[in-house]
Length: 491
Ligand code: NDP
Picture 1 (cartoon, rainbow, N blue to C red):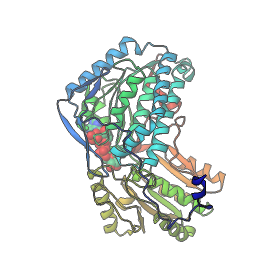
Picture 2 (picture 1 turned 180 degrees about the horizontal axis):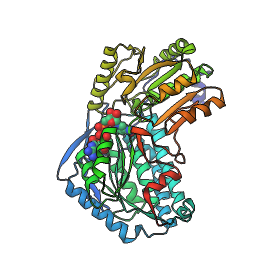
Picture 3 (picture 1 turned 90 degrees about the vertical axis):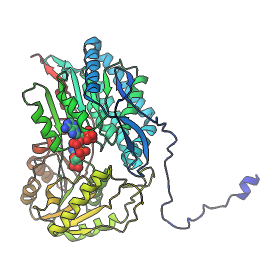
Picture 4 (picture 1 turned 135 degrees about the vertical axis):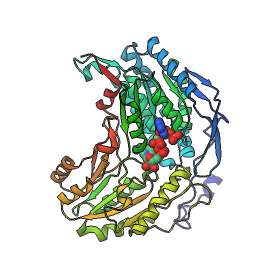
């Protein structure tokens, strides 16, 4: 009763409306001091190592193995053995059970994975928690469903697994890219050697514990950590039947050249410079949210980021005004704070690249806008940036910046929007904002982009194929299309 007496009869009025810190606890993550390679279901001590850090604080997190060609060779042998020793001939319904288990375990341990992803990669916890983890689990669920239906997916084509898949993934969505690669490969009966990016190996290494819990047979998935040299050793290994790569166009081209004539299957998911096109009949506030999500999501480290904003001339001024106002409300800082919108840049190297391109934009004559923003002292940070007065020839309108930097251009007619949007060597994605359904279809037919979002942006679903045209690569991941690169057909 005394307790009740003391309660005020109304909730107190807050003293001010600024956000209080809301840090997610790190306690759930148990880091090892040192990690080896995961080969044949066991941890193998690494002969060479490097340190992985948190890009938000530059704090050392763990010592990681730097995979040598010998490590890669062991991993490929383990994968080959597991392929021949039962995995490839296991009924699809049995393979599916493992994939379902992995999906459920990812869901059960999602908080632990989300915290680790943000810690090692710098992305805001609300994104790793609400986007990366649910999508990674969904990918395993989705491909688990296909494992016993391959004959129906490709009728009369007698689908068979390809063999050992070498998979090389980037640092922007470490666990999600792992899921995009491993789930379809396993569903089709292949075994895997995967290399995570040098700067973000930790969730891939924690994933090995999920494989243990799921009792996946030894050697079906092998993880070798390291830098580009380890990736090159996977690409060059004669025992690998298929390479799946996501990363820069430059390295993608290199891989394609190295594989020419080898008979290995290849899929490449490379860079982008997507057009996000806003017509004057669109719902402007909704479009502003889509623009912000399109370029500042994951610090702009997104291959399909809407980095070129095309605004119809008649709404240019109000839209840019609204956008600038919205930018002032973005909270930049600690990735583990649940209120953070924009986290840390993934590495010192990437920060340098962003700075270099932003300097080029200023020099070429574009007008820069950055909202007032206090950045943490340690770590790698970049203020969300908008460039106006941008010409199509500027580097900031041509090259992938892969950071929180938007270039705004204008157009008058739908034809002009299409022409300008397609004026790029890339072709991964695009966005269209308009109230007219017929215009959406008209635009979607003409935009040379693998994905076209209408009145939304950066939406992903495992059932929907993703991939590019031109220098954005070839092959599709996700959906029924995503099975094909992991199959050969005995027609
Ligand atoms: P990379 O293409 O170098 O990295 C992607 C993956 O490939 C990493 O695992 C990398 O290892 C590995 N790799 C590097 N060199 C080789 C090689 N010769 N053979 C096989 N594998 C290799 O991208 P960066 O990290 O250097 O980023 C550079 C730029 O690429 C970014 O600024 C961005 O513009 C773009 N990018 C695009 C991505 C996309 O999703 N489309 C993703 C990442 C980057 P390691 O990490 O050790 O270098």
